[in-house]
Amino acid sequence: MPYITIQGNKTHYYQKYNFQDDLPTLLFVHGAGGSGKNWSYQLAGIPGYNLIALDLPGHGHSEGSVAENITEYCQFVRSFAQALELKQFTIAGHSMGGAIALELALGYPEVITGIIIVDSGARLRVNPTVLDKLSRGEHPLENIKYSYSPNSSPDIIAKATEEMKRVPTDIYLADFKACNEFNVMDRVHTIIKPTLIICGQNDQMTPLKYSEYLHKELPHSTLALISDAGHMAMLEQPDQVNSAINNFLTQTFSHSIKTISAYVNVALVDYDDSVRNHVVELMKESLREKTNETILETTWNVEESKRTLFKNEEGVWETQPFDSTPSEEILTREMLEVMTVRLFVDIVSIS
Image 1 (cartoon, helix red, strand yellow):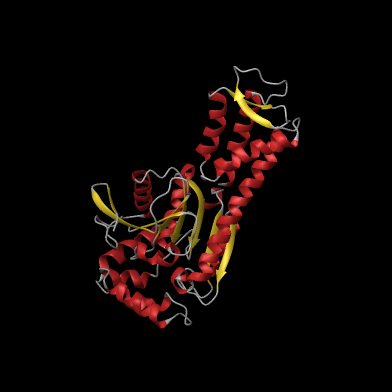
Image 2 (cartoon, rainbow, N blue to C red):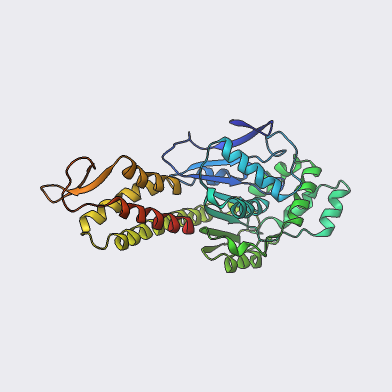
């Protein structure tokens, strides 16, 4: 099992495959009293990404103390990503993990390419009776009946019950207190990253109205309802959830490619199709790495290495050093500079 030291404590995480630099990353954050194991079906069912699911401090196999609030958990996840040298990633969070994902997108938008929220909300009130029982040392095992749909597999519920029994009451109390204090309703509308909001249709803990509010407030969001699922949709109906996630990731990537093509066509309106297609392919290759920095670096590398585009004898656009003798049809560094700025602004706004 892989571990990494964060803030002096060994932090455990699940990783499906060996990390590949040429693949984008999807980072999963579990909910209150949970662990990265809650995302096991997603780790097995999302192709084409580096998939990582961490155990928050004091949870699962991770050392350390639980955080006092969502902001502390957010800072921990940021430190975890930095320790793994993740420049940018899509963040997925369930319940309390969804709150952490929203807080991360608000505080560190430059590292987030997309957001996936599962059974969560912009505010997570906890029933005072539940908090009172927890403060008296009563384990919240009886609440499991509110976490799953009546149509959920008995085997899944039985496994979840056993997992829940292993979690100390004080961890649930700390996590539920953190959830109860969480409220970003006045700020969530400022998040402009592509967002997928997933909600189990039978969720009693964070009911549909929570997800509908997020969908209304987040300008680039998609809402996916999961049938025959309660508060643990990713465990209850993994095929539906994985399908929604895969569709979201595919559509987000396609949107970015279309936007790049549109801006290149505007920036290079005076050039023919061959040069525009050449530049679009250059940008698409960069975008496959899912980082704004890569797109910028690719463009600037063309300039810094003093290369330009020229049309060869066959009429095909190629690159050659500026100190060579290019034809009169040149893609100037000034034009590349304009493209860099326009592409950067657009990619930041949609990724």
